[in-house]
Length: 421
Ligand code: LLP
Image (cartoon, rainbow, N blue to C red; front, side, top):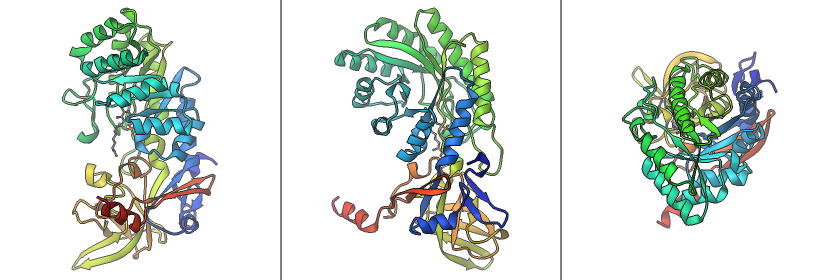
């Protein structure tokens, strides 16, 4: 399959396609139940392949941020293209290992890793535990001593860089809970130097935030990583990598974003300029790997009209896709059984909250089904059962063929679990 067929498309007759196949056909084949996420696995693979190719054979690790979407079919597809994983919990780390991801291709991030999570990382022998504070670094040393292991650690620094993004997804500024601030780096390096049997400093990392549409802030934070890496090397630490983080934005329909390959090319050039050409470059993309290749398909339960106001009411709500409610994110909406264009409706879900609102959508007539686009990342992974609604189904499409349908909790199951509480 070519990448031009990847993700959501319309064909010449206006039919809505995912991964080259009519979505209505796929929905029917999957049993028709909604709400359901549909993913184009071939599109995801082609996307990862293009990120890997951008490294032009230079030492690299594409550590997929599993938090974006932890479906095994997706993690396995990403791994098939040579990517590893950035995990942030024992759950994500265990999942990656069960899917078969090589522990040497896994990093563990997160500001408050529990002792059992650190122990798991040490037992698995992952590439690096990314320490986000001096306190945590000391805790890692303590766990390594207790287990008689030497922990490979990377210092995740806070680069003190502001980004032009929603405040909820900016992580590299002075006020953020993330990363080791410049003022604490000396102490962090001293802790490592003082624990030669428990700690091996193998990398310097950062993650400046999410939804970067151009590389400037990414490169600025990467420069901060390089400065610290040079300093660590000067102090005798045998680093093997620098990690510039994820955050490559995608086009949700309103503004184009630089491609992940562009970020990688610029990052590689910067690393070389800084005299760190021999180190492996780790990047941690999440959204850009899966976002464009997933749609949330919902049934229109009914329309409602009151005076001049018109609503379309879906069976999918903020419990299935929380991004609009949480970040005022806008996702394109497409009717599956009507061409685009017509009079505007306000599209809302069934949840008893005014934030359960997907925004405006123009369509000629009330459609039976809609697809909410670019929902592959932070869609299912942030879904909940709020209002007594089971989690949505997930449908996996590969090479235009339906290969798996999973989940789709039923009402009885939800009721049984809540009756036990
Ligand atoms: N690395 C670390 C340490 C992270 O915290 C994240 C995302 C990533 C990598 C991947 O970033 P990405 O390439 O996906 O931008 N729920 C929000 C996004 C939260 C991102 C959290 N951290 C959303 O739906 O926009």
